[in-house]
Amino acid sequence: MLDTFTSDRKSTSPLWLLLLFIASLFSTARGQASPETWTSVDGREMIATLLQATDTQAEFRLQSGKRARLKLDQLIEEDRDRVRSFRSQAKFWKRLPKDARWPERVTLNWLESKVDVVEDGTHSKHVYRTPHFEFVADAKLAPNLVKDFSKIFEVTHAALEKNPLGLRLKKPKSGYFRVRLFSSMQGYANAGGPPRAAGVYIPRTKEILVPFRSLGLRQANVAWVREGRLYDPSTLLHEVTHQLLDHWLDYSPMWFTEGIAEVIGAARYDSGQLFFDRLEEGIKSTILGKKSDRHRASSYAKSQGPAGFQFPIHPAKLTQATQAQFMGYRPAKSLEQREIVHNYQCATLLVHFAMNDGKAGRKYFRKYLETHRQAVAKNKREEIDFSDELKGKSKQEAAVIVEALYKERHKKQKEAAQKAYPILTRDRSEEVYFEALTRFYKPFGIILTKGS
Image 1 (cartoon, rainbow, N blue to C red):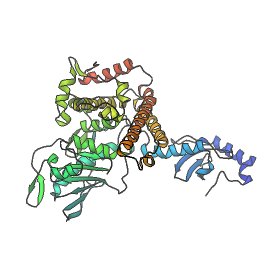
Image 2: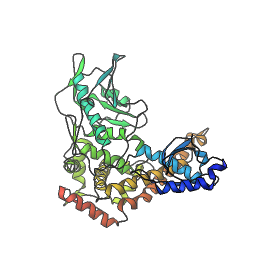
Image 3: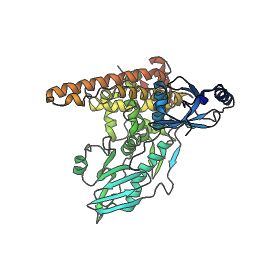
Image 4: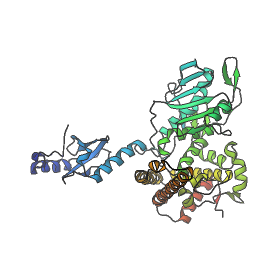
């Protein structure tokens, strides 16, 4: 192991420093991160590019081309923070793709469509696997049926791998994203599934729950088969997006979390293919209530103005809304269902616009999300742990402590959103930003008007 910051006096000799300086003159970035200055705890400096890191050490490429591995405790605290930031960014980001838009069409190959039967009937448990997902059903499913609906999950994975922002997808510990399927609505509800939802992602267990009913199935002899009617896959596309971006859920603003899932749900799905070539039409259909899910029709009837879809929430207010404000739970004020749905609609419009906000839109959107993530990560490190304080407390005392935690989180989320907002708008005023948003959607027949 090459220890650049060794205590050996030879490493700090004028000759060593001269060689390092000469090497810097011949360095090439090769499209990777630029060399930076790193400082040891005893004040020595090194110019190198950080390549990878673990909890205890980091690997650098010197400007001579050689590699060096250093223990983190050899670096000053500020540089250790930079290494930690590098590690976390690698978990969340890939290199920014060249393509500025979603691919026009995402299609699965034969291998991505392959389904393996892992367990068939033991203790009423049927397990099927595709390259990235594991489906656990409480009843036997016809082979062609599994292959059919599993394509929804796999094509969503394939599409998100090509997302224009370079978001890195989550890697499940087991190697597979888990989906549980229920033959009865009671079993679905007992597992935590909302009765009216066609499917739901549970962040606590990292599972998607889906009732057979939402897939349009019926029981035939020993296996369940397709009843013949079509079903709307948009909710499943939405929930799969949450599952694949699970590591983002605690770090991204709520409008982005739900907005990007809605954008995926607005793409046209057909037989294992996901079409983004007419995405604006899909978003328009979603916004104007022509899809039945999420009660959009009734929501639009209450929110449209004489000229089109109202955007009563100012972009700043929406993007700086905390999870509690977006969904209407404590410590924020409660919201009616139509208000929550309207938040989803506005978030859909904002996410798609931010990705297409001029040539530099994706770059600034990505910088905005990373700034927000780092602010949230910093807040999490500084967050007070209430677990010890709750020990031995009465229910009433514990409720007061928990409420204080909710309020503190609410405040910190607000601060993170406010810090990142100017990057999203590129310091444009609220009026100028809204005007750009309006101009973008007008050609697609989505006329935005400010409400009260």
